[in-house]
Image (cartoon, rainbow, N blue to C red; front, side):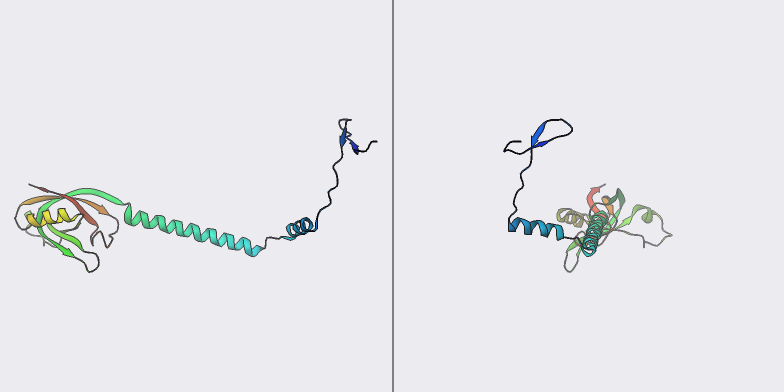
Amino acid sequence: MSDNKLEYDYFDGDEVPAEEQHEESAEEREDREMEELEVVSPRDRYRDVVFAIIGATVALLAFLAWLLFYHPVVSEAQATGRLMKVECRGMVFKTFEGEMVSEQYVTDTIKRQSNDFLFSVETDSLSYRMMMLQNRGKKLTVVYKRYILPLPWRGSSKCIATDVIEH
């Protein structure tokens, strides 16, 4: 054979150059030995599983909070009756709350009027418009959205008035 060290390949029958042996330095040997010694402990696996469970739980709770408080317009409806009062309430979050006697309870004199329609008002301009219309004795229709749960800054009621129609 010649100087360039050829190796015989039994499958092809062609001679291929042999790979040269590389002398590894002390740093390379140390790095290789550290990679061989590195073992993933079961404690690390458990920690990863616990972090994954905590992350999934936080994501689920965030989704449920969004679903219960922000997204859920359960229904959009209208209520007709006589507007009794609109007032500003709250210590931290000032919201406008309204009370209306429904038209079905005005005509029925046998039932007590404990089933008044309570609602919160969405905007200040709508609440001031309702304040001008209260106690006039006119029949009004309040357009509202019903949510699953109330939020303090949205009002104390599940029903949020979005518009009022004067008859």
